[in-house]
Image (tube, rainbow, N blue to C red; front, side, top):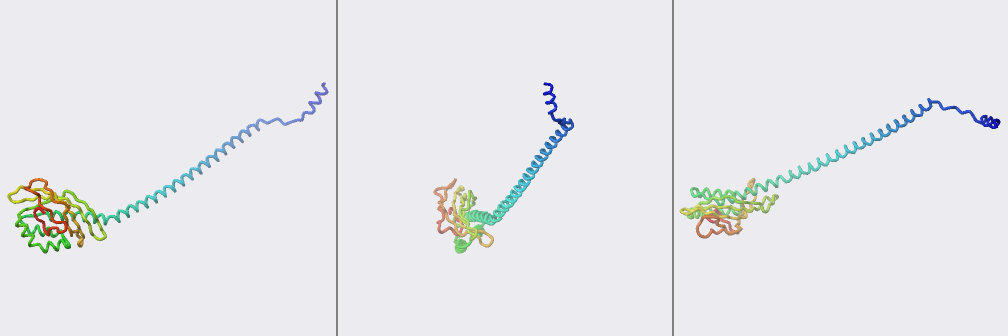
Length: 239
């Protein structure tokens, strides 16, 4: 048996024992591999962040371009609408002023009151007022009724700024001041067509949309409104 044991021991080949230093080297290798992996991950993260920044910058540029474009569009729209807005305001102001001038009468200056009314007229309306100027003055003096008015409400109903024409609805409160009579307040509702004469808007036609309505004071029935197709050449009491 000792011979067999001796034979087994002789069959074992010699092998080099592991050196402790080799174990340290293996750990360093693992650590280096881990560090390299982290560096690769950090590098990929940096690339992703850089790409995200590029996309964000591009989106910001697109947003700025869009804002400039649409902002410029709003400016162009505002500029293009400005002339029409000016025409609308001027036409409405002229209609209101014409209605007031034609429903005002100062008995101390009848010719001046009629001239004021004519200053707001143009076209056929002015031609009729000029033609009937003397008759209107005589009638106003005979009636001996003063008038003053104020606008209760107004609005443009049509506007053709290309042709310088517009139509306005004007509601007035007209106060008649007759001699030896209490004041009477009436509500007038007029349709005023205005057109641009030179640089100024003026009335070229006036029509009553309803009979004058007695608001307060007065005696008897309210006055008759002027015919729709034939507005008065000059303001008359109760017209």
